[in-house]
Amino acid sequence: MKFLNPLNKAMIKINKQADVVDAEAIKSNFEKSLTALLAQQNFASEFCKKLYAEINEFDSNLDTENEVAARLVSFGETVQFGIESIGFSDPSLIIFSGHTEDGTHIQLVQHVSQISVLLLAAKRPEPEKPKFPIGFRQVT
Image (cartoon, rainbow, N blue to C red; front, top):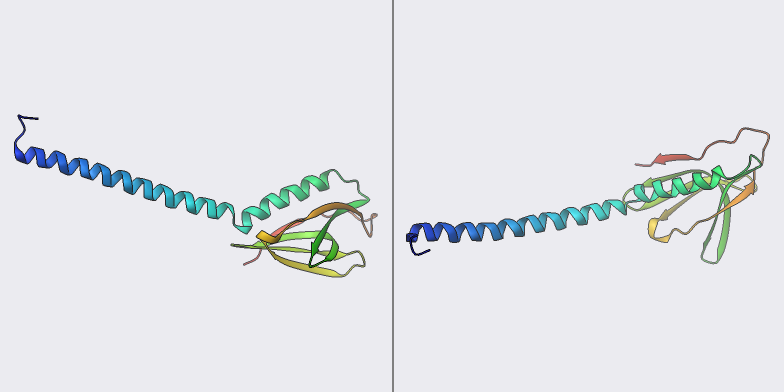
């Protein structure tokens, strides 16, 4: 480096500093993108897609006499209901719609962090009628 004049040395120093700044900016942008991606993957919409796939997989193994039911336990109470649809409201709410064993229409709105669902087969109230697929909807 003896042959470089002071101006060239200053330019090299500036370029090295710029490389460090660029690397830090790239790292910062990457971390922000990763954080945003992880947050999106934990949105209710993503959770709902996975839950929907699990429910439909369970349903595909049932005969026409049975439907997918869910059993939820909360505050010491147990609720069992046939699932008609599942929906979501991002960022964090899952909505189940269905009917209880006595035919009462229900809707359960729950935060994704509190969901624990036991899927089970329940006798359909009208097995002679066609089986309807479980719906999936977005709530805005």
